Amino acid sequence: SDAGPASWKRRPHEVSAAIDAVLADARFAPLLQADRVGAYGMSAGGHTMLALAGGRWSPAALRDQCLAHLEEDFVTCVGPTTTSLNGDSLDGIKLSLARWVIGWKLDDPTTYGHTDARIAAVVAGVPHAAAFDLATLATPRVPLGLITARKDVWLVPRFHGLAVVEACAGCDWLVDLAEGGHGALLSP
Image 1 (cartoon, rainbow, N blue to C red):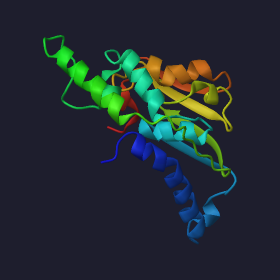
Image 2 (cartoon, rainbow, N blue to C red):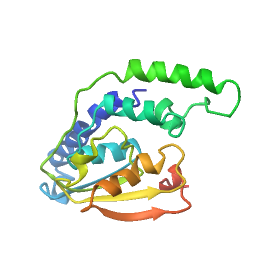
Image 3 (cartoon, one colour):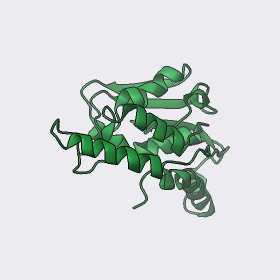
């Protein structure tokens, strides 16, 4: 129910809390090497992984990206709702309303991030990345693997996964699914 920046602020802390819980459980603690934890996330979970790799983001950065590229990255900016741009006379109204809501809801210039020294490597699948300062991902604090899907219409690759690939010379581009969409990383 808290999609977007509200949950993005919590998610990295929740990963750290999950590691704490595993380490506190006598059944699972022996299975985890506490200083060499690997983490994986896709979509908003990919956003979490970028933060855990040392990336810094802000709601205002997402606002700026959305206002600059609203028509091209509409689903990212308004959410995967039944509202879409159809090339009809209502598109102008939808765009105007979206710009107003985006300007109002994403008016937070605070920069957010979270690191956990126990996390030694992360993989971000089709990450939501438009809110990140890509310079903070140029040299991640841990090895960062990326998975992209070229036909992703929810998170347009050039604004998200491919933007991180381009900014991060030391990242491992693990998979580039030429025919994959956003859900290509999910089980059938």
